[in-house]
Image 1 (cartoon, rainbow, N blue to C red):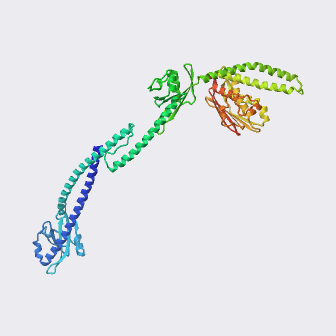
Image 2 (image 1 turned 180 degrees about the horizontal axis):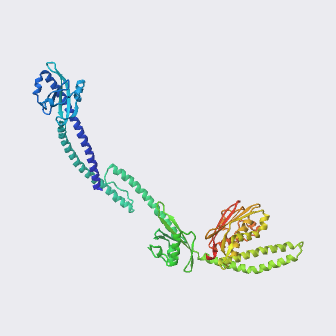
Image 3 (image 1 turned 60 degrees about the vertical axis):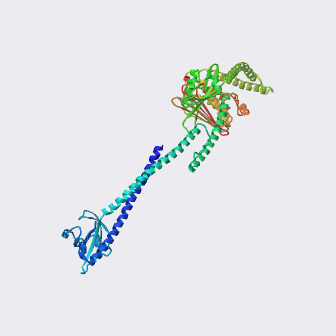
Length: 569
């Protein structure tokens, strides 16, 4: 740094001095040239005076570095002090200085002399001798006279420049030492700030620039201190919250290095302190592989894993760090053993209760149907008996749906391998709702085709429940659009209606058992509250996707995507 500063300062000074040297030489040359011209003019005037008084005295006149020439008005050389034989000279009538003298406006002219073989300055005047003969007097001096005087000046200029170079180098060294010392002082203080010491910087001297810079730096230091304290407080608060969460939390960087793990995760997996790799957290290799795969494939659905008799639900996601391209991977681990056990107990109770209710309900339904067939419609008891029969049928449907859901949950259900035309399933389902659709004047359209290799009964239950909802909850004179599609690996079922629609707050819950948006309407339409729950379980059974979009008062669109061969899932 110091050496570079000295060199840069020296180079700048040298460039300036060279420019000054060139300008000085040019100025000195110009001044000496002007002096030579003035001397040439005055000497010519003196020689003219001498010639007019005594022409013969001119021939014996000898002046150093001065050439005197007498020329006739016709341009012939009558006399030249540099050469005795004037016959060798050319006619001079066209020379610039001669033309200027004849025109009455004499001027100094610089020109190369073929006779003397060097640059000369010429000046000419007209003169008249005592015998009234008019001639031209020309005086010339060599350019070398200018350079001789200029050379002497250049020597002094060079001496001055050398002195200036030495002084500038010494001053640059001193300035560099001072700047380097101040920068070193600032560097040391910045290092202390970088290491966490936010003490105000004291100026090393009273230099105004230093005081201004350090004042700004101290203000920055204060702001850094405040920001650092704030971040530390927020960090402490965040760590306390994370450590007291009921979920396990593990955070890793893009390379898989653990940057944060809370107490719950450490306790759950028995992780040691100061671990660095994610692999060191899990003592179950299969669990580590499952988490690594979820992080790699960026899956959004939770991982369900049984670890040491505990049911774990593991979610993974990534967080992009502000201002960088780096990402942090977050792993959330929840112990859902109690929820799973409760769900299993509910399923068992659900299945047992459904099974136990099936037999008496079948008896009630059969007996009431037999009595209705024998009873007179005008009997006062007929409407009560019919009500018993209707309710028994509804309860029987609920029980059958409950048993079907229990089979779906336990996956103890027929999954025969056959090619099922979804178009045929749609047609069969529409036949069962033909009467109700006609009563409501519904316009139903179906397009497309898809063939699924799976179980007809399961696929019929899926589509029949969706079409049933579209019919039951539609408006008078509404419409239903059914479209089927198929790619190489997936089949799509899309059913849209112009029904009453569903409010946004109900959509997350409509696939739950017995959940009804409008209980009174569901009862009037004969719904069991299990239709969409059955749809959801069939879709889950075949690893499909279910999407429901609805606008209150405008209608609902249900989309189902299934693998083409559901028997291979």
